[in-house]
Structure formats: structure tokens, C-alpha cells
Length: 107
Image 1 (cartoon, rainbow, N blue to C red):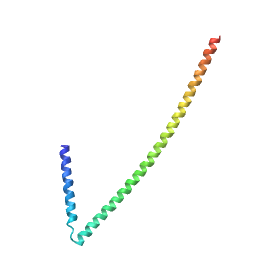
Image 2: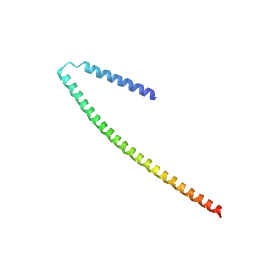
Image 3: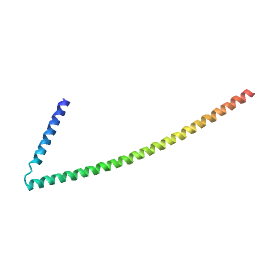
Image 4: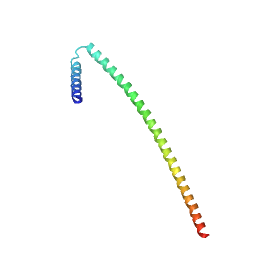
């Protein structure tokens, strides 16, 4: 049923496309041309507004992405610092343990 609905929609779209083409082909008077031009200009303005909104959304998304990347880099740096500190603590504890073992074996 989804395929049938899809095919029906494609037929409707093709039919509408043919009708629109026939309308443009059948413009015969200045008045019809003015109406068509008015319609096209309206569509152009609508497209420009939509383009502007999409551009704004894209810029906001890019800024947001940049912020997330910056936060990720900061978190990675912080994690690396914690890892280095942790490794240093392990090294210190191993040295202290070794000193205790060596000190015990001398007694």
C-alpha cells in the first residue's frame, strides 16, 4: 500500500506539472502575463525568505557546532591532564611501595 500511495502521488505530481506547463504555454494576453509575472515574483520573494531563514539556521548550527567542538577539545585536554595526574600518582605510590619493600628487606 505504501508503494501504491507513492505511485499515486507521483502521478498527481506529474499531472500537476503538466497542468502548470499547459497554463504557462497558454498565456495569450497581457493581463494573463501580468498575473503570471505577479505569481512568479511572489514565489521568488517566498524563496528568498526561505533561503534567508535556512542560511540563518545554517549559521546558527555552525556556531553551535563550533561551540561543541571547543567544549569537546576542552574536555579532552582536561581528561589528558587528569590522566597525567593519575599516572603521576601511580608512579609515586609505586615508588613509595618499592621504598617500603626495600626498607623492609634491609631489616
